Amino acid sequence: MSALPTVRGFLIVTAVVVSVGAAGAFALVLNEEKTPASASASASTPAVELKDETPRLEAIEPVRRFGQGGPGVTVTPPRLLAIAPATVPKKTRYALSRLKHVQKVIVVDAGSVKVAGTAVNLLAVEPAEYRSWTPQAVADQPEVWSALARGELVADTTAVRRFGMVLGASYQVDGGPRLRVAASATLGLPGVDGIVSAEVGRSLGLMQGVAVLLHGKEGKIREAAVRKLLGRQVQVLPVGADAVAPQPVAGNQQAGNQQAGSPQADKQVVRQGSYLELYKAAATRCPGLSWTVLAAIGQVESSHGRNNGPSSAGALGPMQFMPATWKAYGVDGDGDGIKDIWSPYDAVPGAANYLCANGAGQGGQKLRKAVWFYNHSWAYVNKVLGLSEAYARTYA
Image (cartoon, rainbow, N blue to C red; front, side, top):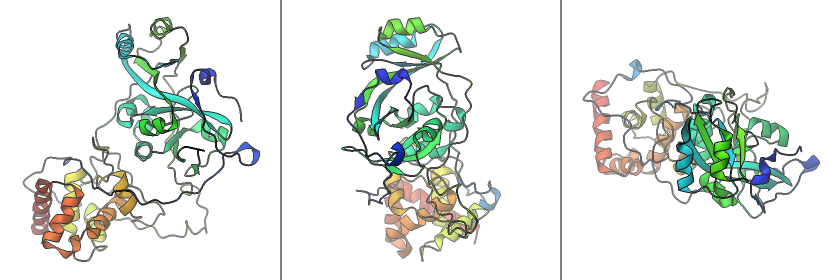
């Protein structure tokens, strides 16, 4: 594998090595499903204000497979990337933000881990804070942010090619966590091979608060001024402002590689055209559960796919699942071989599965308790069941 850029000189190399496979490729470890320690439902508050009348479900937008709704992200592309030899103090961060032509500053964790004997440079970020620092095509793709929330690696597309990574595969870190390469995207940062969540970064021993990204007028931020504040050992690299990122690739390695006649290609994929049809079909998974309960939850959580998060609590997708809950109760609703938290075709039947596991099909107090498990608030339960009754009257 080719040597990495000189950024590595300023990144801490942790004592993390995995076994080397043939021709120096990463050693592949198959995924193993784990039962989450807990399966709490979404703790997010209702995404929309409830109205007196329920909307006609057949009148709203058709179902979209990937929910890219929610508040739009206005990207603030980095103009400079600085790697400091130690944690950047708060007062220095404030001083950087006051530099001429600097409009925005973010400081994240960074470091280099050894995988199969080769250093891999990583940034460790808080997804909600970092999202606007990525190219628009990356910021708009829920797969990337869902992967980070699950504790997985989003690799730069060049790193995937250079290291021979397999999307969807996990790589065992000797003495550390396994990292699943869940998605690839053109990150546009020189010397950076991938990003992980801040929590994963801490488990890898990455240095905290050493990577600084600065946004401002293109070509106007003075590198000398940045060096003066961060010290002589800092490395400052310009970042291409006009880099265009292709759409990230989902991490399931079978997706996009299906050959005609293969078992995956032969699966029948069934997708309803409207939310009304989707709610009705999903409810059949739980005998005794009315589709109107699913419709009410869909309205409260995302306004039927219009506001898909991530929420402030980390809930994702049109039915606002927490990742741990989805891992336990998510389903492949449309038969495409993927359990996708962002896809209504999976998320709505997943909600039916979760409600049913908590006794929703038995009705009465069991139903109320099942809805309470979805969001631990009796006010939420009352809103959902009130909307459910309104849908029942509307479609009687």
